[in-house]
Amino acid sequence: MKKVFGRPLSMKNNPFHYCAGCGHSTAHRLIAEVIDELGIRDITIGLPPAGCAVLAYNYFDVDMIEAQHGRGPATATGLKRILPDRIIFSYQGDGDLAAIGTAESFHAANRGENITVIFINNAVYGMTGGQMAPTSTLGQKTTTSPTGRNTTLDGYPIMMSDVLAMLPGTAYIERCTVTTPANIIKAKKAIRKAFQYQIDGEGFSMVEILSPCPTNWKMSPVEACRWIDEVMTKQFPLGVIKDRPAQEKKREQKGN
Amino acid sequence: MNKVLMQGNKIIGEAAIRAGCRFYAGYPITPQNELPEYMAENLRKIEGGVFVQSESELAAIHMVIGASAAGARAMTSSSSPGISLKQEGISSLAACELPAVIVNMMRGGPGLGNISPSQGDYLQATKGGGHGDYHIIVLGPASVQEIADLTMDAFDLADEYRTPVMILADGMLGQMMEPVVFKKPKPRNYPEKFMMKGAGGGKSKIIRGLILDPLDMEEHIWKLKRKYQMIAEKECRYELYETNDAELILVAYGTSSRIAKGAIKRLRNEGLRVGLFRPITLWPFPAEGLRELAKKVENFLVFEMSAGQMLEDVLLALKGKARIGFHGRPGGVVPTPAELSNVVLRKYNRKDGLTEIEE
Ligand SMILES: Cc1ncc(C[n+]2csc(CCOP(=O)(O)OP(=O)(O)O)c2C)c(N)n1
Image (cartoon, rainbow over all chains, first blue to last red; front, side, top):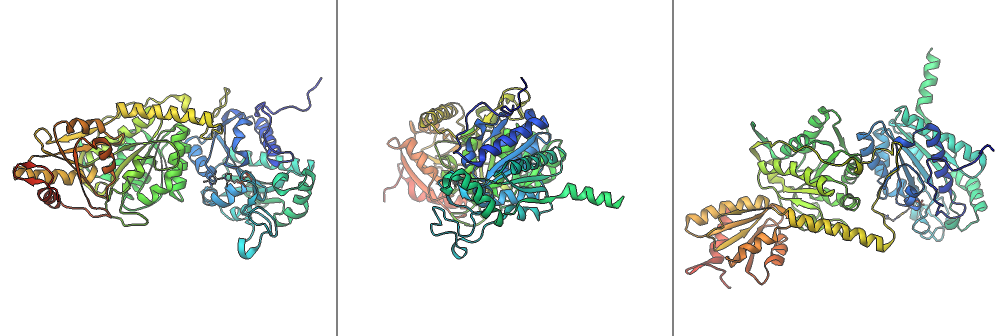
């Protein structure tokens, strides 16, 4: 019999600790599939964050080094500069990347570090119990915005992908989600492209994944997916935000 | 070997490069800027040498973590306020047992303080500094030659014990020009198995400080503790100066030990028998060497460019065994040998010899 579905080779045989309906598990699987398909398992080093994905090294069967909260892109910089032919990915939540680690993300992107960041945006601090994140949407109720996020008190949701896309150092940034099979396929394509660009030496690549957090949103997994599709994507529209290599190629073709 | 005349900060850079340092990250802060500038110019000339001017001291130390994990000899430097920011990463290095060299050219503090030479970060450096149960090796050079030697030793110690090592000096030593001879660096002896380079067809590795089960975490901390005990047994270093016939021992390290030597010369010219105990390793603190002296000397005067920090270690080592006095000038004040010798004359000079005058 032909095997049509199995565990990616870059994934350990450990059950996920993630809640039912959590986007981290889907994102993990997609990354592992891409690592398999690109044949880079042996040269890949991953950096799990502080956050719900802190134990990601229990799932990815690649070398992994823990990053302190928000510092993934800095530690990744050290690794990549010493090992330029290895593939380095930093896996980060929205609190990690867009609050405590804003400086590290921004400057790694600005230096055009040839690394890949997987940015899991679930609009809350998942691990610590659902506090307001820099990406929480306007009016969103969290444990630290109990009456809903209010711009006068809490500021606005940060669109980090759009901010980073403005920096010349970034090669590729796309925002995806994992709410439907079609969206999951798109997300996987984006992750693959991001890793491929790193292999090609294009510079900083990042895939933002709007990711359901049913537990902290106090929704069922299905409701959580619907909330992303109906509410979260209004604040964070899906799609390619920047693809410098593709633009350059287009320009070249026009020139010819 | 040729003698060269170079400034302390640059000497660290040169010694580090000679010792095989291939990664430096840092953020500008006075009084150590000549070091990153030296690295920017010279480390980048070396094959595989990486210099990154980071966005902050935090980023720098976390870059060092990555470079160290990747198998490079890695270094960062700063001065007091920046070292405070690095503590998160230093704690991580200790937890993950990664080697690295951190230079602190201390300045006056707390807070933004000033940019004058000071020794106010002794406690931060020697008692852990960041969060959690750990220590780092702390070396306190007192001359530019010693800066060169200890910088090389720092990389060897960091590898041998898989631990961060700090060079704790101050703006004075960093700016000072003295002739130095670079010793021949030892060949590096750091096993591949501790480096993270991708699984390469084998089993994948994990480097982490997160240990969720308290019993496992406890076990890890006891393991670190045993390592620290071994370091304390094997690596204590100190210098004795004019101690053979001494009736009073000054205890000082780094810049203040140079001032102390000047004071001792003056005092000896007046016929007073004063000597110096100079810790070279600040952690581990050479308590045993100090206790040895206390067998024949009754009076000790701790002298620091701080409000009294190493004093605590001296008290721990000698309490009940000797009389311990203190003279300190915190805040970036650099006292003269004359001031210190006057303090000694005032406080200790009795007809029957050098013992403390009770007020
Ligand atoms: C310096 C520091 N501050 C705070 C924390 C506590 N902490 C751990 S994870 C986290 C937030 C994680 O949120 P996010 O990055 O959005 O990831 P998620 O858990 O939602 O996947 C916080 C605040 C920490 N580990 N370190």
